[in-house]
Amino acid sequence: MEDALIMDTQPNNVIPSKETIATFPPFQNIAPENIVVINSIQQCEALREELEQISVFGLDTESKPTFKVGEVSTGTHLVQLATLEKAYLFQMNAAIWDFLKPIFANRDQIKVGFGLKNDAHLFRKRGIELNSVIEL
Image (spheres, rainbow, N blue to C red):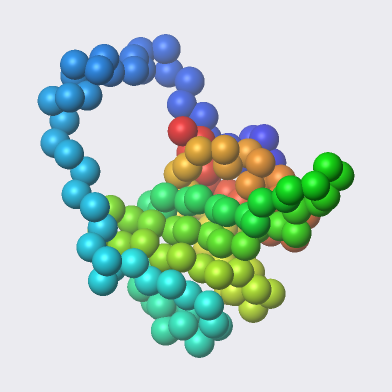
């Protein structure tokens, strides 16, 4: 999977200064009506065509925390795929994992996020390949 991660290793890329960042326009939050919570395969199917048209997703995952020493996480419980205009929050179950599998594997749909190497490892445990990833 290491070779599937796209890393930005260009030496010319310089992190902008705080002063430069301050000149950037503020991010406009996603409107609440554009945040979609998905917990059924029927909702997934209704969004299939829309999701297949997206070329770049922001990707984030969440798991329920563990509180005891030696306690093992039961896995990813929420997957967020987002564009600049819309966020899709998937409350994970077996059918939704199966639905998202082609999106995660699709080399023509870029997934961008933080800490995705760990997500890729967890996805592989489920038999899901995470391709076209940009690790920020």
